[in-house]
Length: 211
Ligand code: PRP
Image (cartoon, rainbow, N blue to C red; front, side, top):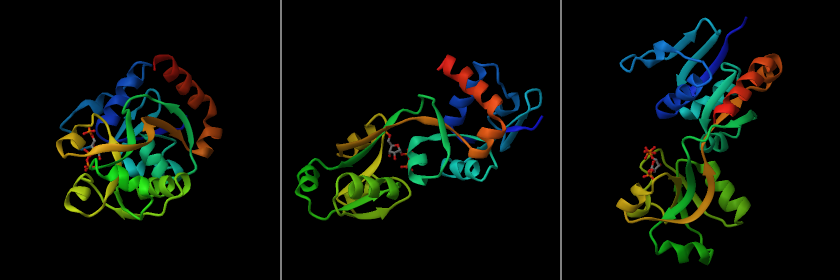
């Protein structure tokens, strides 16, 4: 039997994924060693392989077939825009993609004036402002600590993830518009879906029962 390979988003999402898989009898003992720097793990009995990748790279591994299955946030899937089968909403990692800024930016947003939007998600920001709102904006790509941008005057607003809302609050920013809800998703490579259909179906059915 061929290995079924999972690309997991390293960090909290991978830990949550393994917790969920354990509920359907899939375990990987060697992944539990917190000190380990290992990136790839095997369950010989069930012929499964798991590797830990950076979230933004998970869709790439699955698209090229280096992994059959990926677990990744919906934000990353939307931003990467690859052709994968999204088969399951795992529910965890729930948060929202929002337009945020200082309270005063609410009027500015409505005015339709050209504003600058900073984001780690330029494609999501572009799609929202251009295709949904039909509003021309300047998008500035950043790589983290996005909340800084409107505070230091780099942009008027940001497009970013809001989970608890405490980062916004502690920096005097608010949610101005909600773009969409987010959570962890299971995606499958298009060829794997055909070749390994039975095993993947069984996995989806099992997970559906415990989610
Ligand atoms: C994310 C996101 C927000 C924050 C939201 O950043 O970009 O900054 O979490 O969470 P909260 O609503 O619970 O405060 P992350 O910590 O992933 O780091 P980053 O700033 O490097 O993107």
